[in-house]
Image (cartoon, rainbow, N blue to C red; front, side, top):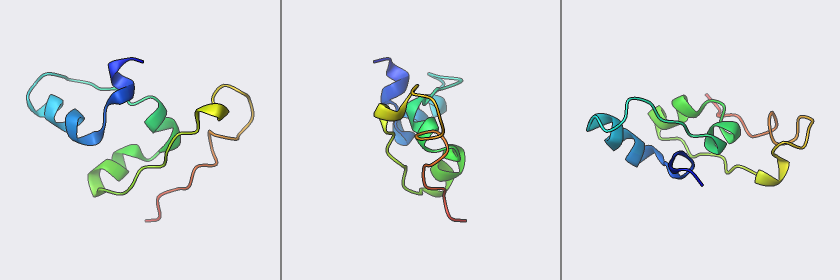
Amino acid sequence: MSRNERFTVEPAQISIGEGAAVALAFGEKFIANPELSLRTKTGAPLNEPDAQTFYVGGAKGYVDYPALVK
């Protein structure tokens, strides 16, 4: 597992704030949370990714995660 897959919001913000990173990738978290940037800005809970649906074809696991209610 790469380091990017283990990032959570708080360590990512610290890494950017300290200048230790200029860009971060969230991978699975972004798949499960297409509005990840809005969720992190508002402190909204994150959907958990379902790895069993990755790379199997079809919409399951890519477009059926609960959307953030605005």
